[in-house]
Length: 163
Image (cartoon, rainbow, N blue to C red; front, side, top):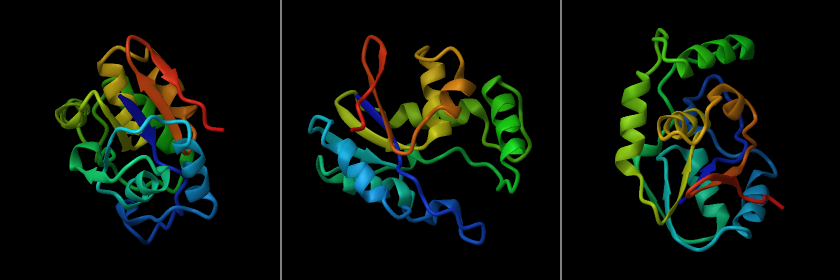
């Protein structure tokens, strides 16, 4: 299984994050990443940025699933405040307005297919990897994710080449 964090999107605070399109150059970055991925079944979040990333990968048609959508949380104008709350959430704390950690992990796990490329989002992907014992420092892993980024999940977790 390969988990892909979507490519960079255009952040529009007046538009729901699920409707954000990919930023300039992001389709090309996803296509370059796709050249390094094996053809397989492609699953994607129902969010626009994930669907566009899945299509740009060019490894096959994508089937969408809400299982892979990002963690429900409020909008943050302050990136530092968002990071602090993400760190608390990964540590198991209840954060006001955030989907429960266990609910996000269970939702994601219910959609996982081991022979698929799954295009998803950084927070929910990190939570599932933590729950499956693939990461031990979820905040550092989440903070260091690229857009796009791909990780092969096998016996170990291995970053896929991006260029």
